[in-house]
Amino acid sequence: MNKKLVCAHDELMRYGIREVVEVVQQLQALDPHFQVLGENIGDPVAKGWEVPAFIKDILVDLIRAADQQVLAYTHSHGNIATRQWIAAHARRCVPTARLDSEEVLFVNGLGAGISMLYRLLAPTARILQPLPAYPTHISAERFHAGAEAIGYRLDPARQWQPDLEHLADQLQRHPEVAGLLLINPNNPTGAVYPAAILEEIVRLAERHGLFLISDEVYFRLVYNQAAYTHITALAQDRVPLLVMRGVSKDMPWPGARCGWLEFHNLKGNPAFQSYFQAMRKAIMLEVCATSLPQAALPLIYDHPQYAIWLKRYRAELAANAQAIYAILSRAPGISVNPIQGAFYMTILFEEGRLNERQSLPIANARAADLVRRLVAPPTLPLDKRFAYYLLAATGICVVPATDFESPWPGFRITTLERDAQRRDHTYQRLTEVIAAYLASA
Image (tube, rainbow, N blue to C red; front, side, top):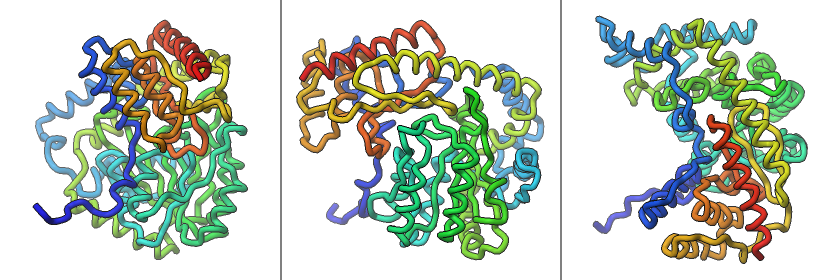
């Protein structure tokens, strides 16, 4: 074939969280004894969180129902009763909210929703991304624009809160920005944003005529004395707001691939209304999102056992995060913040501590040769070099911070490990390996 098939700018799609899995598979092929400790993917089920019996019972009952509705197509924009439940739930969270069920759209996981929302933007419209970023968001935005992302920094010196001065400066520098993304609670940092920060962001959006995208997939997972502020309350009647939520994190069912988009403050915003209508059309082209999780969603969240399970889940996540922080905060050459939500932690190397000569001993000769080839490119980020050596030498799989477009080198871990002994051993081992790596050259 002599025709060009690949579209332009495909190199702008990067997803290090999953790309490192390919390196894991190569190491497993070279060394049959290689064991991986996956700290790269936020999958509660893979980390040993059992799906509660009441959720399984709900799914079984739905599948066995005589009407077989969950095995058929549902409405193109989402199960009607479930969309009504979501609109009512929005009012329970924020009594003044005026979300209508027709302003809710279901997608096959927020990954599909993210891809669609950037694809339907005008070619010149840019969305300001938080840095460190979530790879799916920033890759989709880059690909849409055909250019590198425009971002605002999250400040590690202030518990990863948005750097409002840098954000305001970026808006002044980039009049092409049409919207601003928030991920709260944040992936990859575990930060939760207070009301004062969110209010300032809403004011900036008002001043510059922007719409806000609020990715809230972790909004139920807040702990360690943090309080969650619903930005819908602050943004009401002020700026257009797109809220993104899903079931993959606050119940152990990531394989459901079920998410939804809430379009708030459509009235009086014709450009936002046109964007919403384009999203409705695009979703109709996909026929519908998966029926079963949509039907199950209200039954699960309203089940009396859910609140009990969620309280226990949050408590264990908080204990995990505190234990991991206690271990890593003693390690030399890195800085780490305690987290308040989600189940991720971003660790940074102190400035000047990494170089291109550092390494770790790798027992398997073929694995060592693979790593030498992986780290050979002169443009390889130094934290990625560390991650490759760490993986091959110990089996501990982390994601380099630069894969999240972090301005600073480091790595992200998950805080989902349920086995306390294995958790403590893994992170104590990690601190020892960090010290050895930094001392190697």
